[in-house]
Length: 312
Image (tube, rainbow, N blue to C red; front, side, top):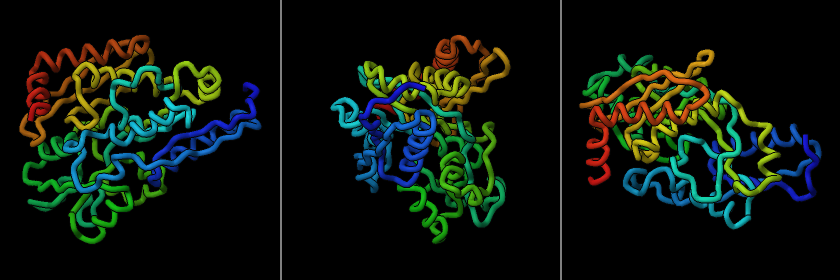
């Protein structure tokens, strides 16, 4: 434990229910780790929150949820920003760094439905809500008959649309539902062989200025080593592919002893083609493993697929 200065540690966060939960959780962990440390939240509305009538792919991807928080760090209106790491683009602005990540929650996707216990139980032509190209591609690969419906908004908004009967099922992240006390709403956890998770799904990250020694030291005690190793492999995979958070790219790394095993996927949005591979490597160089797996998928045709999607 270090002796905190009298200055409070300010946390930039979105105002959504889940973002506020994550920021409050980090604040509580910091207060517990450093007696006497004052921590306060700086809530803000991001561009991604303001635009709800168009898909994320159409308006620039999930980075729209992030930029205002990073500007607050750069302008020293906040000391840290708390993120769902799956929303964070592979490239960070110069001068900012991920200082710590918390232990990963369940990384899987969750199927929510009032009428079916499993994905296979949904009737032909069922309406399934998601705005993720990654989820859309894998759902349609498993069930080409499904009708994918766009689904934006916070968790409560999405649940209301399901409960109102607008859709037969929706797909959300298990981690977010668990954190909000909504685990009972999960009908089925989708096997990663059916729906490989988003890069860093289930990981809460803490971003700060790289030159802010006090903040770096304060938050370093929260870093979970194994989660960081797995996340670094997944993010290196996405970075080498040049994919955005909204690209049909998926990755999940798991640790067994000194070995790191990385699954990666690039898909056609309509599910007609899934490029998938698995590669083992060392926990000592997770980024190298991510890059090597990306190279294998690029050699299999992922580059032209992603380039066509970017151009379109």
